[in-house]
Image (cartoon, rainbow, N blue to C red; front, side):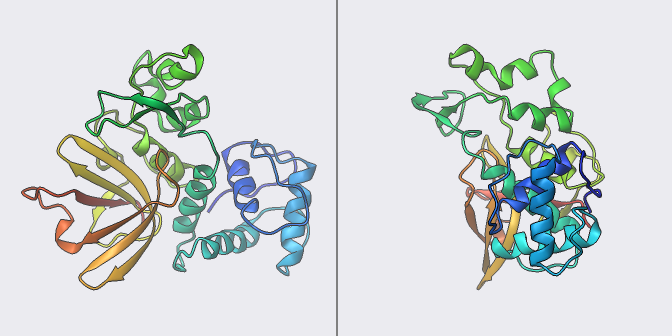
Length: 267
């Protein structure tokens, strides 16, 4: 459960709060997700509390967090769960992925280091918080510069792949007690995660096909006969991505199709 927040609080939990509130109807102006709990954020909290029969004290404690995260999850059509941590992970990831520009691409420029020859992505200073919060920024002396390189220099250069770093950032920002990112090793190497064969909201998915690798946050899993469809939140992909996965494609090393593994930090 995220921490209790009051007027004057600052940090990632406040940004999570602002992102979540911005997804709900309001008669007030949309909040700036700046991580500062100022008068406008307090007014928005009080409006939310009043609309939902809660004490309008402007304090975001466990009861307000529970109601807020449940409503945000319902809007995203996430199955209800008693695990508020799972709802928090999805809310954090969804709120951040809706911010435009972070995963912007350079038109007509292909990254030849990418097995799929996709377009270069723009550098963005917002990526620094993902790298710093997960410990990835200090992995190499040049990592922080590499994340913002395109934005600062206006030149083409391979950018570090950050889909897994984004997923871990969402989990850590939601308050889960997990380890830091191990560059080049993936989510399976992070302390606190274990493999699961029943993906649920808030878990981290990992897909592979040859040299191609990709991480994402599971938003919901919907059974479809012998397969199931995952709705996901992906930091460097369209925010409404989904995957249809046959049960026999959950880690079969001999298969020639994309394979999936799932990791959870929840009991």
